[in-house]
Amino acid sequence: MKVGVPLSATMLPICWLILTKVIYPVNFETSPETRSLLTELKNELGKFSGAEVRVFIVFVLTALAWLSRSALDNLPGFKLSV
Image 1 (cartoon, helix red, strand yellow):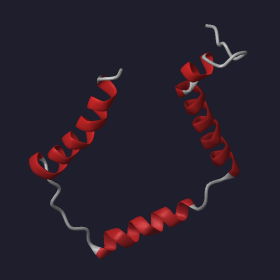
Image 2 (image 1 turned 180 degrees about the vertical axis):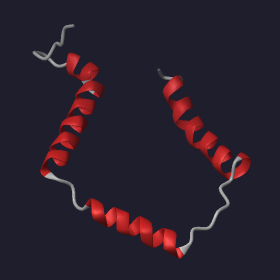
Image 3 (image 1 turned 180 degrees about the horizontal axis):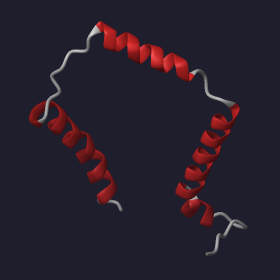
């Protein structure tokens, strides 16, 4: 973990840059019609509904609880058992 996480965190952006800028560069221009269509489609979606916000909050809290499980195991009274 002490080697893998920093190595992965370093290599991922480096590989992304190499793949997107050197090996497979994206060379296309978007027309004004395409931009206006995409803007119109985005505006049709509207704001997030209350249900969508609640789902997002539950997802974030679940991810944080999952990632902080090992830290919670060290707190007295919070031992999690499987």
